[in-house]
Length: 529
Ligand SMILES: O=P(O)(O)OC[C@H]1O[C@H](O)[C@H](O)[C@@H](O)[C@@H]1O
Image (cartoon, rainbow, N blue to C red; front, side, top):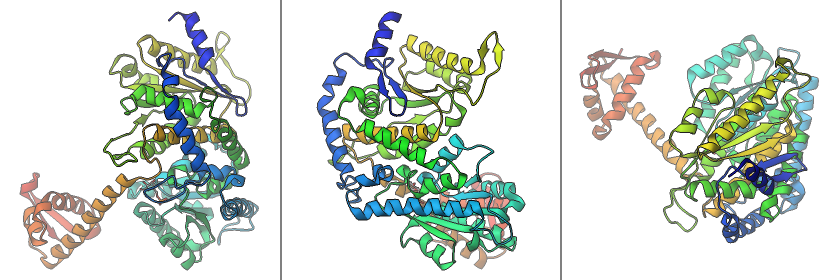
């Protein structure tokens, strides 16, 4: 194709969303002339399914739940008055609480004001707030935000040591929809201990975002925490950033929550239309289908040329892969669907893996994100009249071209800035695209049955550890091999897990387990000190 023909293709297929100032360019995807028409029947079915979902159908059949994240930014569209009031009440309570925290009306026990927010959560209960905080935050925010999103003890120490004395002016927000996630529970208990160690009453510094009646809800109420904010079964964790999960941290940080919701609402309006050419979410889903043959055969590389959007790929990784990575179709057939997502930011990644994208295995398509506004204020001319921002665009367009020359496909999303409004629009765009794509490939995007297997297996590991410790204590002084200990606790078949547990126990002083003997598993001996 000549440059001129590409320019024609660019204009013909450019999807323009004036309400949020976003465009989607699909001209560098190599779909054929009849692809969009050919997909029309499937896309029509996807539109019907989405319309039904928004009206309150049970769109998550396995869990028999409605799927209501679109109502979070348009409560008037919620299918009944009760839901609408739940949303508007939540928004009002979040805003009022943040106002009271900022004014000092709600204050810590031993400091004048809360200045820091420590968020404890994981997965959908952390990734949204992390994306928002990183994309929109600055040193001038009303409060500084920190995260504990793992059960890694050293990771917790790093965050808590970083807060240091400021723990006295830290508001801890524990987020868990189910209220039973172990990583979050552990993080909460460790944070509680850190407050107690400093002579501070944790409850007077803590709030919860969780489902009514959950373990966390009961704990928060039982320990007189400052507040609890609701999470509902009709909002999935990975689409919860516009519930209290994302709004409370954003409001506390002093970000433009109204703009965030408005951007999403405007994008929802744009992606609700059944005209494919005008609907960027439909086009994204169709391009994913085209690129991977409807089977996820190509990976989605998210490349925003903007530092503030670096967590976009991480956020989309959960949204896309947890939604689309499914064993079974809606009819119960084994389909093993999915779309792999990775990426960081340009031009940084050009100095890392983009080499492979241009010349290596062609198993991906790129989504460039171009941000028109370089920075607040004027830029330095770094070479001739060129600014650093001119270079950023130069590198984006250069990589787009270099990939296309080698037959590697890309799309480009162009947005005016990284404002709350734009971020809300981007989140809404991908939420809708994931929903459409799930319909195109006939899967349930709103459950995550696969996640449970790992959790159950972890439960068994900890159960074995309990038995092992009891055995080691009763057989004090006698050094035994992993094989012997596995037999002792009636877990001969699980000797490898037993060895891994002993290796970990003896590397840490917590349980007083000592290792002796050789370095190889069969030579190692363990005993209670
Ligand atoms: O919010 P929570 O109930 O604590 O869940 C946190 C996360 O963990 C689960 O394993 C799910 O796979 C995620 O979708 C969820 O966001």
